[in-house]
Image (cartoon, rainbow, N blue to C red; front, side, top):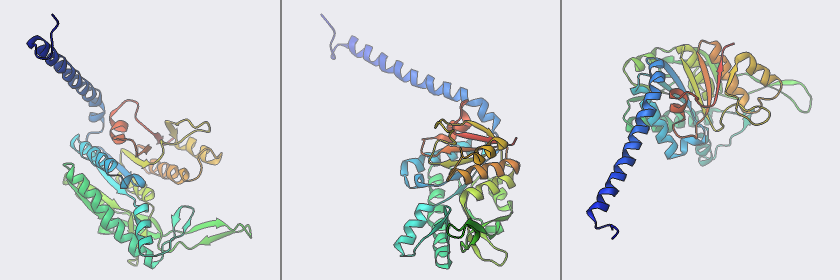
Length: 316
């Protein structure tokens, strides 16, 4: 006679199977933690600047995983500093307010009406959403902008491009679009020393007190360089730098990266990201990495596993 669901022997066997499965899960978790330990020790008390932006910011699941990663980084002894963008959110608000937008080489032309909206969205809505997500995940985050404590003193960005009609180079007025001229990191250091996470909106202040909209990648690179961060991680919507066959390039020196830009392997929107990484590495950041921010827990994969993720750029 075979045993059935009501047979005590059958029930005991089923329970043992469930216990074995649960034990296997615990062992797998323990193995992951053990494998991560050397990397946790490597980054203890190191500063990691993370640029967070793009369309992924609007996806609740991705945002929650990002916040969890930042909190776990902080709990393992890393000092994470977040610099965020907000292009899609800015675009949506400008459209809602019926303020027209135009772009030059990927940079938003920002007049007086637009800069007011940009500052409102970045320092208000987006910044506080990220701060709240980190706090809800168990961390302690403080939102600031580059104007606080004159963290990022900016100057007007002068952009030149070739006129397709005349063939001559001409200067394009982007309005209140700036670039960092000076980075004062006292505010960030104060937040970090207080065991909190600084979340920085990429707004700068000019010498005369004017407000500037600055590319978030550029701000991340400038802040990482000023902090002499161990890592700068740029979260994007691509796996990293690809070769001509579409394969991921896992590691580049600054010299190799420049060569790939020159021969056209690196093109389009990837050029400014790679240039930001090159600049950061030459400012003293030990390594800059371009990662796919759409991948769940990609920050933890990069920092705490042997294979990492994305494309790493180092000085050389």
